[in-house]
Amino acid sequence: ILVWIFLFVLLAAGLFAFPSIRRRPASFAMHLGCVLVIAGAMWGSPAARQVRAIWRPDAPPADGFMLLKPGETSDRLTDGTLSAARGKLPFSLRLDEFHIEHYPLDGDPWSLNAGITVPGRGGVDWLVQPLAWTDGNWLDLPQCDIRARLVARENSSTPGASPVFRVELARGTDTVHRAIGGDPMRSFHQLPLAPLFPEAAYANRSISLLVSRAEPKVKDYISRVTVIRDGQPAGQHAIEVNHPLHVAGYHIYQHSCDHKGQTYTILHAVADDGLFLVYAGFLLLGVGVCIHFWLLPMFPARGGAA
Image (cartoon, rainbow, N blue to C red; front, side, top):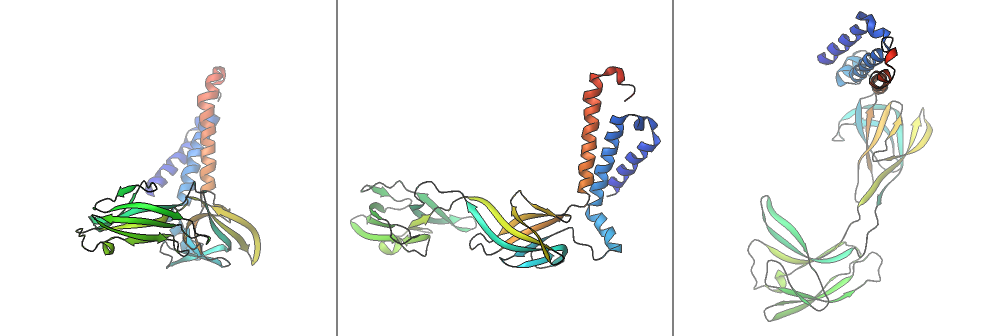
């Protein structure tokens, strides 16, 4: 913070100590722009907030997190662990709705694969290997001497249920028939092969057939909230990733959520102290640069007066 103060004082003093800067619009705009950028950064810094808290201990926090469930209203912010209180916002937010939008899946989401557990650095790793199933043809399963072939694939009449995959498994002269899938309450089915061939020993690993559903990629997270000020609704807004809500000096960002049940959302509130000073400073700086490096060279006769 001392470096920022030194640069601020140095630039501000230069505006008054050198009259030639004030007589040249381009130089004046660039110097004043730098002063405003530094002033805005200093005003919004944690050190400046600590100083302001001396005479205003009840000031709203610089940032914090808020966990909301649908229908819940709150103005309280916590730390990143969502356990320690950070303070209150000067307004409240009510979560009207939270949902996750997904991209549509291309093709059949269900697949039959081989799953293998193998020793890893942290213990045991679970590997899933896709298999190129063709009706009636035998496939050698990975890391074992068991073969398999897909006998039939039967679609379920229950909405959301996986198809039933009927397979024939063989090891040497031993063969078995099994069906896997079809449970409407599950998106993952596992058929361990070791119990089917007990005499087969595979050290430190196991082989299974898996039926799994591909999850669509997330397109967007949307929290629809109502801003409440002085006990009255002050507008409804949709908070999305990269589309925060700005209200009463705070930017409200979509931070995290319940990815499975979509039962809650986590918002991140960040104060914009000094932000407009920074914007104004960059605007002046850009105008000064354009005048100095673009306009003045185009009109050299006016160079001594600008």
